[in-house]
Amino acid sequence: MIDEKAKEIEKALLELDRMFLKGEEGKIYHIMIDALDKSLIKNMLMVTFGNQIKAARLLGINRNTLRAKIRRLGISLSEAKL
Image 1 (cartoon, helix red, strand yellow):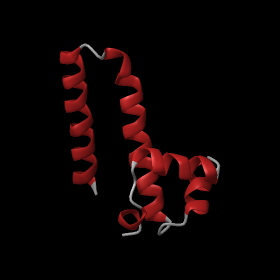
Image 2: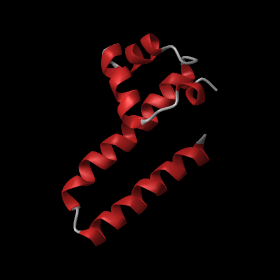
Image 3: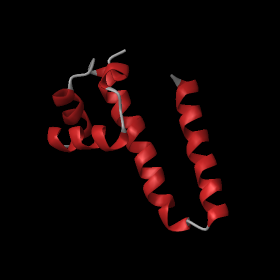
Image 4: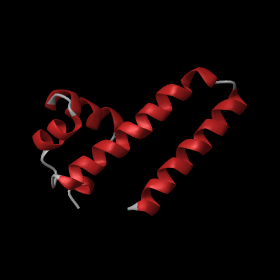
């Protein structure tokens, strides 16, 4: 799991480098927040064996908010249940 996190962080940093080169600095905050959200949500879904209500409770957010983030961030529920 640690290797997975390192790869996600590395991917986000590479994306930041790409954005600096393109002059898109204004999007860095949102990219980092999305990367953090995705990681947290995937972890909570794994811990709760895909139970979205429990995952939302652990994260301190509403279940509907969690579901919206899952869709927006492209999180696979079948992958998160592993």
